[in-house]
Image (tube, rainbow, N blue to C red; front, top):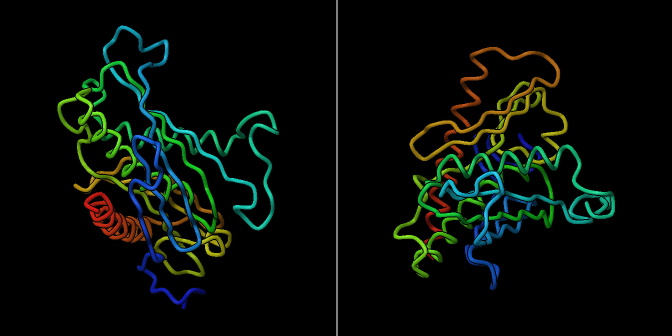
Length: 238
């Protein structure tokens, strides 16, 4: 029995509210148990210098855990001179995940910046960010379409992300912080609606794991991601 009473293959209670931010071109507030992320998408008519003249767009991300989003107060990035290594790694992951399902060539020379802020953190902030970022970016493209900047939404297909792991010898879906901090194996999976993997980040924290365990974790992740994609569709339809 898990500490919150869930079955091994059960997601935490999830709420996604699309259009949460009044001023952003796209936004989503996602609550996965006690992990709450506020994600916005901002459209700007500029691109990185190295992309100028190529006619392609760009999608990038910034990630931050607000002070007291966890049990102890963490310092703001600005106060410690910039993002740390963990933050940089998560930002790059979010950007890569989104770019893999976007037709960048049809964006024109524009940038969409995704801002992901953890309001409350209980494990899985990076995967919740990616899942909500899809919703926010989809909305941003709808805004661009309404303003005649593009002819159609440039998302090729839905995608989402989830954590899986082995805790006390059991494969579990959607780890909270307590489970993640004691996991024998920890994995983050990003996958499309058609079942194609975008990224798999897996580490044996203690004993190495075999192919059978890997297969079961990937199957758990796929189940969870398909459920998340249905929730994304519901949020966007509302």
